[in-house]
Image (cartoon, rainbow, N blue to C red):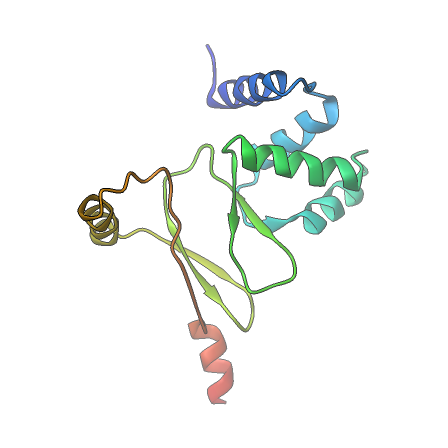
Length: 150
């Protein structure tokens, strides 16, 4: 029986094949890690995790594979006010939006059906067909606000 992970592997293999690229063991390791760990990450954090686990994946391979995973629709870049790009694995997750703390950098995911309906309505009113969207709200989280008040 084919699992969701099998389907994701096959989709990425097909994407790479269309680009004339191989599904190397290193690319497979990166994909496997992201399938199992759906938290937000940046490339340097991923490199550090692989180094700590003594998994032989080069920095260049991580950056190139992330770019391919974004292009193939497996990863989404989470827009942060930071010098690092953060990503999340979206190939097997439900659509959601983000609240991002400007102070500590925590990312809070949320869903809001009314917001989704309003976004679709605005697109329809403007004759616009949405292929994808993200909502990113910056501010200060409750924990950091509490720290500021003491």
